[in-house]
Length: 479
Image (tube, rainbow, N blue to C red; front, side, top):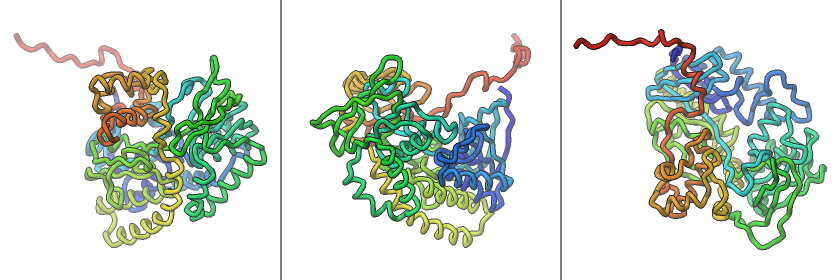
């Protein structure tokens, strides 16, 4: 394997609001910074840039698009090194980051590292969730924001949280049909958090705009309902929904079948804390904040010297919170490197913490709406596939626990659950919830041990071009 190596003062993995702001803050303080992302341009999920050559219609543009454009312009004008289209597959201590790019492999080495890898969505399994046409809410936003593409001709949008309305409104604006909006929450749940949502008037107006657009399109809205099945032959053809209680457990009532060729569904977000987990940083479990998240000081320092975490990967807080936590982590890295005086750092830190306090009420309300529902997991039928990569059902997980698997790593050995290409990102939270039902808590159920590769990487990318004649063969040992 051939690889180039770049040295810097700071590596930032993830170029969303948190990572890009961390990189900019540290670079402006005088550090040599490398910013790495899987996408070709900065922005992350919320501020995602359109794909090359794709023109996004004006009807689909939002304030997020404008904020993303400003961020990309700031990175481009800064002079820091941005490495896009790079898949980070390994991170080792003190700190070496290996990334696969279209040009081959590249290694980056620095004494400091900011992990800003965002979040991935939680989808609690139901029969038919593996059918073509069933995608996550976040995947739907990627199609809409990056490719200007609708998920289907008739889409059911289901799950919980503000992303429901965002996706449904974008589909309507793009000329698609939303056959139903299925919300785990009820009107009373939204009213309960309304005062906290009102702390961010611009975002509240944006949300109301989404609802007006949905209402004008006469989209049927089913509050306090959940998807209990997706049905079809080669792909989804109809979606079955049923009334549920506050925890997502089915209750007596009428089931509805909604004709659709696409289902966009999501049950909240999980923190993408793979790098702190891989490096064995201290973690804690907090369900509403996204599961297992790194233990941090007020400036984003983890338990490992030189390792910082920011953004949704350190606890779900949304784009505004990510921007501030990233800036703080970048300044902390500059302070720890000696590039920023303690007094200047402390003053900046206090200002940022005050701003974070102001946005926390809104973020807390959103987390509450996206919280995990215990009844939704309890309702998973025995024959339902939980790990779609390895085709492992709930019955097989329960059987493994009954046979002696007491935590998730043992479950992996018993069933191969979590060993597929997604590396447990889709099934991990549900599998751990099911184990926790038997062993008492998520802390007791544990967390999967992270190992490289952090992302699946083609083997030929790692190997590169070589000939057997290039392989050094040591001389035979003397007899």
